[in-house]
Image 1 (cartoon, rainbow, N blue to C red):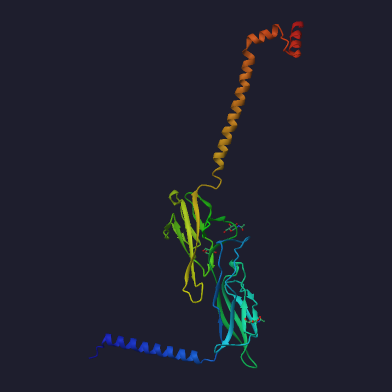
Image 2: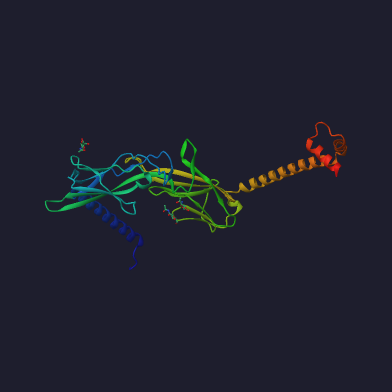
Amino acid sequence: ACRSNPTSSGRTLIMTRSVFLAATLLVVSVYAQTRDVPVAMGNLGVHYNLRSVISTDAHPLTAAATGPIWCQATLNEIPLPIVTSNFVRYSDPQRRKFSPDVNHTMHKASLEVGQTVHDSMGKYRCEIVIKENEEYEKTIFGNLMVYSSPFFHTNGSMNMKIEDEHNKNSVTADTVYATEGAEMVIHCPAVGYPKPSINWYMNDDLLVASERVRISSNGTQLIIDNFAQTDAGTYSCVATNKYPTRLDLDFKDHEATLRQAVRIGSPYGWIYPLLVILVILLLLFIIIYACTACKRFQHDNYNVAKREKLLRTPSPASSAASTKKYELVQSA
Ligand SMILES: *[C@@H]1O[C@H](CO)[C@@H](O)[C@H](O)[C@H]1NC(C)=O
Ligand SMILES: *[C@@H]1O[C@H](CO)[C@@H](O)[C@H](O)[C@H]1NC(C)=O
Ligand SMILES: *[C@@H]1O[C@H](CO)[C@@H](O)[C@H](O)[C@H]1NC(C)=O
């Protein structure tokens, strides 16, 4: 008689939970409808339309955002006068502050974000100070997103170029050289907002981490231990992030690819064959020169008939010097 029925008690529990959840939702929605608390309203997000995916410290990628980010404080959907306002860039270690333009007619604070994508994209917090009553001020907060599809930003250490004018999201970096048997680190300096996730491919096959192949937690580094001849090939990293390009649109995938060939050897590998060729050429030149000199010498020494003729009857072509020499020998 004491045995409980697990099925019925489970059902009761689910029913109790559902009722509780419904009650909570009701309370929350009633509260939301009747609450007289100021809230922040705004355009949630803008994004950059990139024309390239290559960015360096010296030549950072620039683009125009789809518009300013703006926000206002509202009470029951009616905008409230702004006392002061600020935008803070969250993605910044220093939490840079920006002063927005305030339209006191529309009670709107708007900020044109910078054109340098690398240090302008990210999450911004809008802070609006309003008068709560005659005595007190209140600050209202709201978050705004400045999205960017993935791109590659370096200090200039990696030379990248577009492979195909029709696909500006795909770039190739210079060949990287690995030492056989050593650890090899391949970099994928992908950035973007939201922070892109990275997949690595070798010769178009997805790479998975193994004992010898590691991928750093943020995906930007591929580490291969004991690099072997069979590891040489083309490595690509595909950086992907998701964001809506319009408020009413679903999140869309955005992608950028960086390809780099990895070979065993040194970047100056071509210098050794060149040196060998130069040395061979030099030797050939020396041999040819030596042979010519040698031949002329032999010719002069062994053409006895000509020499005798020269000695006995100096031809009119023979020089005065050789004639003098002959006379000198005779008088001695
Ligand atoms: C405020 O916004 C309204 C509507 O967009 C515009 O007509 C007005 O000129 C703006 N005022 C200022 C001071 O910018
Ligand atoms: C760029 O960064 C790499 C490491 O990522 C470093 O080895 C190199 O010295 C840096 N180059 C310059 C010019 O700062
Ligand atoms: C990713 O991780 C590596 C090493 O774990 C670090 O050096 C690098 O700065 C990180 N990059 C980003 C964008 O977080």
